[in-house]
Length: 431
Figure 1 (tube, one colour):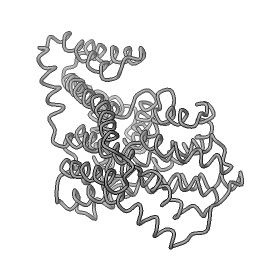
Figure 2 (cartoon, one colour; figure 1 turned 45 degrees about the vertical axis):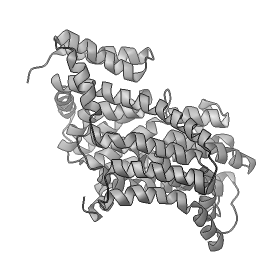
Figure 3 (cartoon, helix red, strand yellow; figure 1 turned 30 degrees about the vertical axis):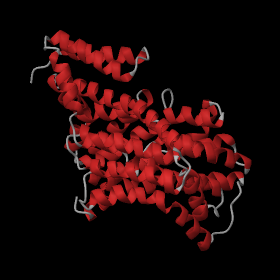
Figure 4 (cartoon, rainbow, N blue to C red; figure 1 turned 90 degrees about the vertical axis):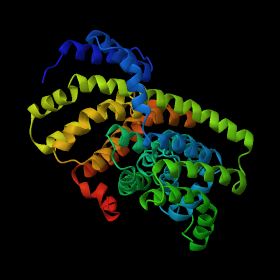
């Protein structure tokens, strides 16, 4: 295997320099790749070819539909109904509103698939409600941003689709099924942490559990929850592909928002579609430029070099697993989620595979690592959105989030070392 250290230095060095200069990640990836190709003397026509190749994926077509579905449902009056459902289910506990926040995020995440959308939508309702009930504002914000990560694991998650493309044809259905149990485990761990803090600070509990109230709220929310069933059941049962299910879910979301809940008009629909286009432009440009970057990495044998360098440090599977997680957590502190998935997957997945971590389990590990990165400075988007929604300073939110970081790391370790947590449900469905 021949390598070119100078070309690798140009590729990686120019990319890191542009990141430090705060150049947008999509442009940084594209420019670094172009400089590398120029040095290697490879025709620049490869840039166009690789960008088209990066976007020429049937699975990737599902991403625009999932994002559109999340935007429509998020703006169509879904959040308050899911909060009411969660309140009827767990509001009776000590720190009941914190529990409601966490469970509502699990429900809403299954619709939006976005941690930032969850933070903004649920946070606008729950944080003021919690503060008015006597909860500390920093604690309320910390619960909101950490519970939003559940939405990245619970299907339908468009980040799972992006990972499936980056990993080279991993089953989207298997990834969807794999996210349910880790997402529930994350919710339970956050609820335990919230309960301990709530008992210590004597936060209030809500009304007693009532089956009548629960069934009433379930009836109001059932139309929103059916969107999840359309996607997940359709894909798992083989009725249609992930892309087809996403397209159907968009139409369903549009009908529900306009005709059933009636909290959105056609003017609002056009506004939502405009917001979706802004998001999609960023995601798809990044997918295209990341494909060039991945081509350069493969051409220069960087994945093999990285794997050899890491395995030369130790051959212990436990230490290698911890090291992979540490790398992903570090990347989460300096990069956003989609670029990490697109850039790190070709490098780290072969290493994970060599120590017995399957593609589906590694996907869940990567998504949770990236989700934790959304909560860490200096570029944690959920951290900043939570601060903007609540008006609490970043420093106070980070301090209040420390106990929840421990809860999330504990779940990450369980997922990393107990494959059954991710794989039991996919195996039940024949994946």
